[in-house]
Image (cartoon, rainbow over all chains, first blue to last red; front, side, top):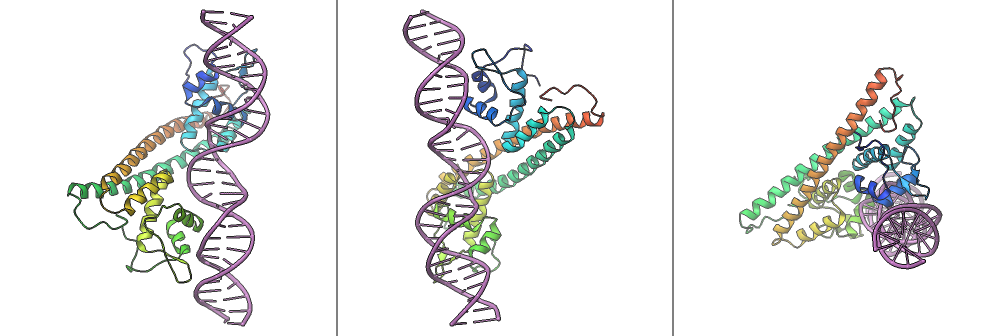
Amino acid sequence: MATSETPADPLSIGEVAEQTGLSVHALRFYEREGLLVGPVQRTSGGRRRYTAFDVDWLLICVKLRESQMPLADLKRFAELVRHGPGNEAERLQLLDAHRQRVDAQIQALEECRSVITWKVGVYAEHLARGEAEGLWAPTT
Amino acid sequence: MATSETPADPLSIGEVAEQTGLSVHALRFYEREGLLVGPVQRTSGGRRRYTAFDVDWLLICVKLRESQMPLADLKRFAELVRHGPGNEAERLQLLDAHRQRVDAQIQALEECRSVITWKVGVYAEHLARGEAEGLWAPTT
DNA sequence: ACTTGATCTAGACCTCACTCTAGATCGTAG
DNA sequence: CTACGATCTAGAGTGAGGTCTAGATCAAGT
């Protein structure tokens, strides 16, 4: 899962933005909100230096966010990881609950998809027939 | 697809809220925003009376919203239907584009799901082994 | 030394999709 | 007639999740 080729090659915020797909604004925002596991290192001049660990964590964050995990849950998860060993059961529970929500989302989307597909079919058929029918009730 | 048992039995806003899962506030909001195909009928006293057509349309709206169609697109779709025959190609295009977005969403969620499942597996395994290992890197 | 572009902070601002409030009115049951 | 709950309108407020701004600083190239 490591993103790094060389084990230690700190990245600038811009580079991390590119690698994660998050904006630099979002990266700073996530940090302020306590969504990162550790404090991000800084150069002597005050610029952020992200380690491969930071980037890996952010990539996971991206996946969790993409699947609609609220920032509050993400924050809780980060806190658990930050506090180290001893709370793995809770981490597991948090992730597993989220996985169930993702499953539910997929199912819901598949239902939507079938409704949409059916409706697309209705239109396509009518168009194919030359759209000269009078059957256009408001909801079809 | 008709929800009505009796072809003509107008419903109150509260009943429609119950049937669609939308709040009465949301129903009024949708109407104001032009998301409905026709104007909703009113009683002499000014109360809304929804027809089975209205409800069917709302049920479709619910599905489209559930799959993240923005209200702006929903509004456009409503406008097209409102203007009647002659724009079926555009309706088809709008729906089909949305269907593609839904497919992409499902795919993305499935990817998320597999990342999460993998991580759940990591925790579960460690817990099963008695959590006495020192392997807890920040991102695992 | 100078210029340029990336980064810094604090905090204001934004969009989306509702949600809620106030104060009035309707309609039905007692 | 009176209560009471459901509904009405216009408009303000909310929460999530960023996004943007201003004004300063840093770092690299020429």
